[in-house]
Length: 169
Ligand SMILES: [Zn+2]
Image (cartoon, rainbow, N blue to C red; front, side):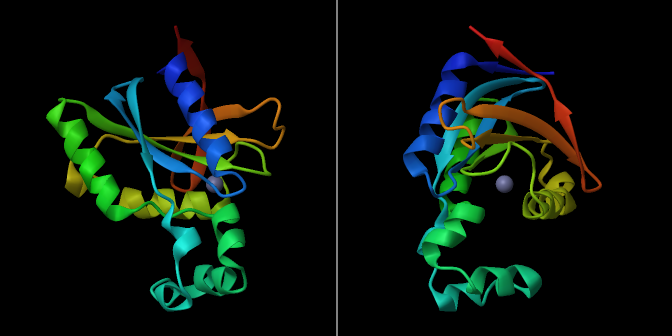
């Protein structure tokens, strides 16, 4: 179970709507199974030039090059590293943990895509070295725009497992 204050759920849905059709992204602080705060992070994929894209490799690059910048941000996200570092510093200064990541799916359900799973596994590969707890991965879906949904997952060995969300008043 993951406990999230209703104000943070409202905030994540508002963020998703503001950025649509692009995907929004952010990180979540807290302790153990309770979220304390959300940090909005810029999705830099929309602003990348062709030259920036050469930093990506393999299949992801081929996929991304075929798309316009707007389309790229619709299907994927990459968090601004500097903003992430600043948020992590703030989280540590409050004695909290980096507990999760969230992003939006504008036109698809709140389930991790193959790219989401790959990104989660990349994070897993260096997480222990950073002494960070296992994160929750949250997805806000605007597929049914009048009824946004949020789901949380643990992703272990490329297998997502849904974690029920308990909304705190
Ligand atoms: Zn996704």
